[in-house]
Length: 200
Image 1: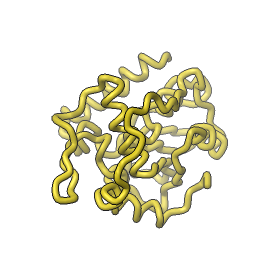
Image 2: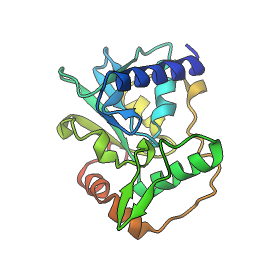
Image 3: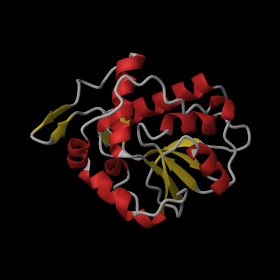
Image 4: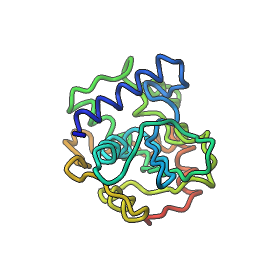
């Protein structure tokens, strides 16, 4: 399967879940993940945390079999979750919208009285995407340019590297007021400081 086809499959699944009334975070069904039945793994997709790149690389693999799913599962499984520094993630989302022509869901995020107002999933706090998953069943990885390879090695997986692109792209915005981000994403920082990462 090629990258364009798997990307369309993923978007079709997302659209179907939202039409069915699945709980969503912006335009992202809560618990959206890829499931590998043989390894009993869910890769939980958090926007701007390499989820699209890794998902396409997994779905186009000739050696591993992944299906698009939602978590949590009723079965005993492990969940792969990538967390990213909230400031870096906010900057990445902003640059994506400024440089790629991707459309925001509804409107630009607004910051009013130290509260973030947006429905776009790329700006939603990371903890919201995993709050229904038992934390003891999650294997946390810290976002970096090698995170896909680190996940592959840890679980003995085989991603399709021709469809794996963690290109950081153009950066119009390079820094942001960290004190605002620490306030807006306080729960994410609390989560990050409370878990052990497999790759650091």
